[in-house]
Amino acid sequence: MSKSVSEISFEEALQNLEKVVRALEVGEAPLDQAIDLFQQGISLVKLCSNKLDEAEKKIQVLVQGDDGEPKLKTAVTLEEGTA
Amino acid sequence: MGTPKILTIKEITRYIKITLEQDRQLNNVWLRGEISNFKLHNPSGHMYFTLKDQTACLKAVMFRSRAAHVPFKPEHGMKVIVRGTIGVFERDGQYQIYVEEMLPDGLGAQYLALEQLKVKLAAEGLFSQERKRSLPVLPRTVGVATSITGAAVRDILKVTYRRFPNMQVIIAPCIVQGDQAPSEIVNAINMLNSRPEVDVIIVGRGGGSGEDLAAFNNEAVVRAIAASTVPVISAVGHEVDTTLADLAADLRAPTPSAAAELAVPSKVELAASLSSYRIRLSTAIQKDLASKRKFSELLAASPVLTNPIARLNQMRQFLDQLQQGLHQNVTNTVREKGAILNVLTEKLDALSPLKVLARGYSICQGPTGETISDAATVKVGQDLTVTLSKGKLSCNVKEVITCQNP
Image 1: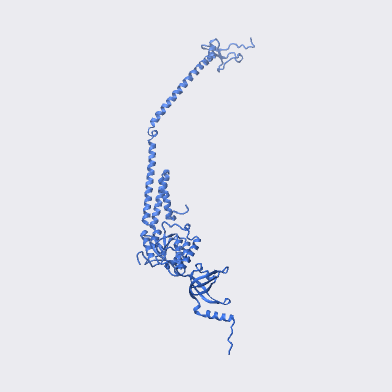
Image 2: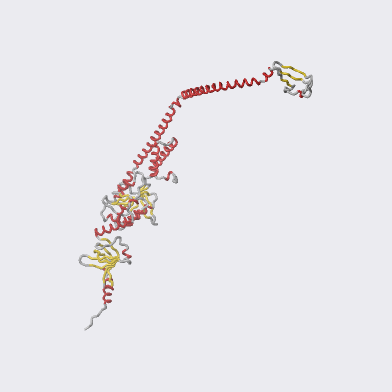
C-alpha cells in the first residue's frame, strides 16, 4: 500500500475491517492466514477507535485577515446553547 | 413689428436636448414599467425597447456593456425597474431613457428571472445527480458558513456536540440576507475550502420570506457551492423552501439541525459498531480454530491411526499368503530343476576322472604337481607321483622311453 497505516481514513479503515471480518467468517483460510486476518482486524479496530478519540473539541472562527488571507480565531463566547 | 426668431430643427432639438439633459431630476432616475417591443440588436448586443404603463410610454435603450450585467433575459411583457438617464436622440427627434441598470419588478418578474437562472445553471449541469459527492463518515473538521448570530449556528453546534463531543468546528461567519450577503457567503465558502482539515461544509440560514432567502438564489453563491472541493450540505430556511443553492449542494437538509445530523456521525454508534466488529472477529477466529481442531481430531480417530497393530496384522496375513504362494512356486521349480540336475549329474559322473581311474588308468604328476603326458618332459632320476584308482605311488624314473626311441 502506498499510504502508511496512519494516513488511511476512518472510512477506508472501516471498509477494510468489513472485508477482513467477512473473510474470517467464511472460514476457508488455512490456519496461519486465519490468524493473520484476525490480527489485521484487531489492528483496524484499534486504529478506528483511536481516530474517534484523538480529536479535541474545538470551535474556531475563520475571518478575513488584514492581509486578505483567512485567519483562524478561537471562539470564546460561542458555545452551544448560549445566545 | 419684430420678426420672430426662426430656428432650425437642429437648433430647437439641441435646445430640447440641453434642457432635458441638464435637468438633474432626469439624471439617474428610477422607473417602473412594462417592457414592450423588445429587440435585442445583433450583432451590437444593444437592447431597444419601450417602457410603458397604462397611460404613457417611454422609449428605452440599453447598450451592450450595461446589458451584460442584467442577470436575466428581459422579455416582452416583463415588468421591470430601471435606473437610467433621460436623453435626446437628435436624429430621430426622440427623447428616451438610456438604461444603466435593470431589475425584475414584482413577484411575477422575479419568479421569471429565477426560472431563467435555474434553467441556465441546470443546462451547465450544476444540479446533476452525478456531481453530488457522498459525505465522509468521520469528518476531521466541520465547516459552517452562516450568520454568527441567529439560531442556525446555535442549532448546528448543539446537534454537533450532542452527537460527537470532541468534534472540531470552524465557523466562517457571513450575513445571510441583504445586498452584501451573496459576496459574504461566497467568501465564507471559499475560505472554508482553503482549510485542508475541513471535510464537510454546512451552508445555510434559518427560515424567512422569499426576499430573505434571495441570497441563496444568487448566481455567484450557487456557483461557489458547485465549485466547492469539499462536499456541501445546504440548509436554507424551512423544509418547503427550495433555493438554487439547495439544488447545487451535495446534500440538502430541511433545517440547520438536520444538516448537523447528516454531517456529524454519532460517536456512540460508531463505537458500538467497532465493538460489534471486535466480537465478530473473536467469534470467527474461535470458530475457525475449533473446526480445524475437530478436523485434526477426526483424523487422529480414524482406525488407521488409532490401531496400527490391526493394520499390521492385516499386512502380516497378506505377506504369509504371498510367501505361501512363493514357496509353492519355488518347490515346483526345484522339483523340475532337480530332475534336470540328476540327468546332468549322471552324465558328469560318467565323465569323471575317478571313473576313468577305476578302469585302470592312472595320473602321473611331476614334483610341482603338473600332470605329465609326454615322456620327453621327464628326466631320468626325477621323482614322480602316480595316482591310482585306489591310493598313490611315489616313483623314481629309471628309464625314459620317448616315441622316437622304440
